[in-house]
Length: 446
Image (cartoon, rainbow, N blue to C red; front, side):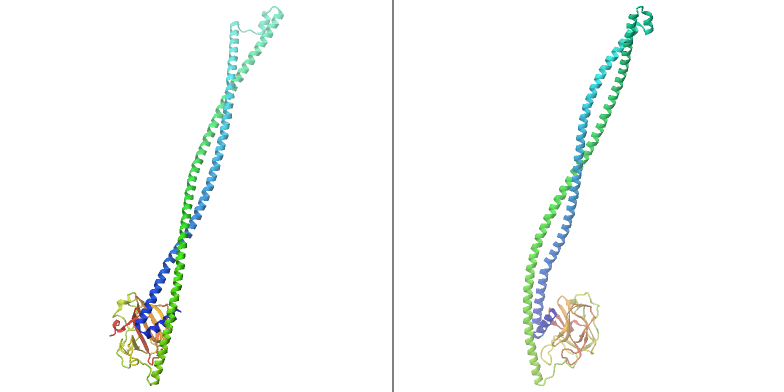
């Protein structure tokens, strides 16, 4: 469609004159560039917002996972702290029980100490009396006593005294051992409770510190998640605004396309009318015995040098006076001279050349037209940038297609006589902003 429109536009401009083609092509380029620029910027911005949204969603998922992990760790810490506190409560209860037992042990110890003191006092007195009266035995009592009854009572008394003394001594020894055992047990119990309490306090403090740190982390992650959600909401609003803008641009593009279609149809109608007029002129010429237009028979010069890629990369505007013509052959006319057949001025050069010779691109560029066009036969047009184009007509075959990039010196066609010419050659034009100018003024051939 683009190629057909370009063909019709070119045909109408060639028939209507260079000024019309210049205005049509310039307007078309301006509208296309404006539409492309209007659509490219918001689309790129929308793509960037989409990428940022996807990135933020991934970051949010990561933050949520980290938040969940921190919350799980906080849960473990709080459960551990609860268990530690429970153990501390148990230890405190054990301390209270141990303190109560300690008080009981202390009371027992005090009672035993009093009993032991009394026993020690009785023993002291017994030993003292024994010391005063001397050591006596049951044998001495029997020998000293005259009355058997008195002796028997005395012996019985001495047995009680001896038994009581032995019991007292044994009890005193037991009480001493018991006191020592109670002291050792009390000391051991207190040490164990102190050690457990110290350990539990240390563990609880560590857990409290972990809990504090994880609380802080959970708060930070919550703030981060909240900020990311806010940014995602903002980006979604931006995305919505841009989508609306692109819908408006798309609508404008459709309207522009409709206007361009109308312009193309108008140009097509004008081209058809012009074709009809041209056909009528040809019929008129045939009726009066006139011959078909031919290139002048007397050449004005000859070209031998062919283009090369020596100037590739150079702005086309800087190539004035350095270009070689696209084919070897005789130059049959001058730019701007009147055509003998129609009286219309020449807008390019016709170079007579051998059939099948290669037609070279005069400089690097891109093929923008490659098709048959009435009056020009197989035509190829190269866009060299900055508004400069070159045209090669009446070819036998086109060797390149629209969109191909070419270098200076590349073969783009082969010489023929398509389009109604009686002689083989190439019709060659140079144009700036669709306006033709003299190829010889830019060529090394003068």
